[in-house]
Length: 275
Image (cartoon, rainbow, N blue to C red):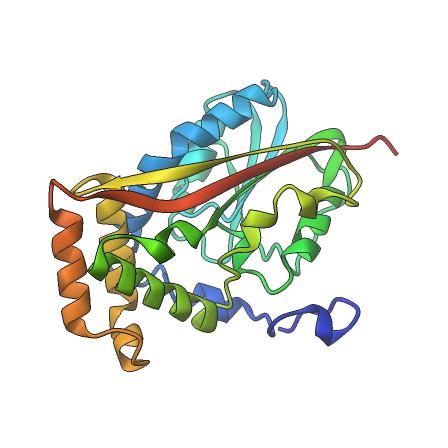
């Protein structure tokens, strides 16, 4: 399937579900569920705090886009809200039906919901992987009821480019290049937030930014090791780094004395205007 949005020039590359679902970070990879759980362990507290500050309340209809391992959708269900969670591959989400979550195989870039379907819509580490992120934001905003809140959490890769740790710096730069070419990820799009929310029918636009810290042997370091290992062969085949570089980076990531920055996470939100 191919997405269209006025002219082909508006998109950086052709979108197919298979490009993301069956490529980098496929659910078929044996370590993928563990990798997602580690990511949840370092991000979920921040996500929950944003929901609380933005007024999540029992009875709200919430759409969780790109649900991944399902921790956010499961937490939302425990808050007494009506949860819909989507992904291109729902392997890790199907079990959430047992706690009352509606689970849908759904392509946010191509499939629709009726306007006014949700009181909250949330994405995390999703929009940057799409060929036209602003088009995706506009689609999400249309699905909100008047007064509904769009909440985006997206990473930017600039902190890793100048790390003082040579092996970590080299493989992270190589991984970034591979992600841009293999998935089409715009690794610096999030740095533009909250500007992409403007002109989408949203008021009360706000944002914040933070740096994810990483220390040798912590969950962030292990998440990066698994993330890098899943792409290691492809990165080596592309000549972006050598096996020896990965081994050296893993030694740095396991060293208790290792401390550095990981990704910058930009969070932006806006409230749907009344019609």
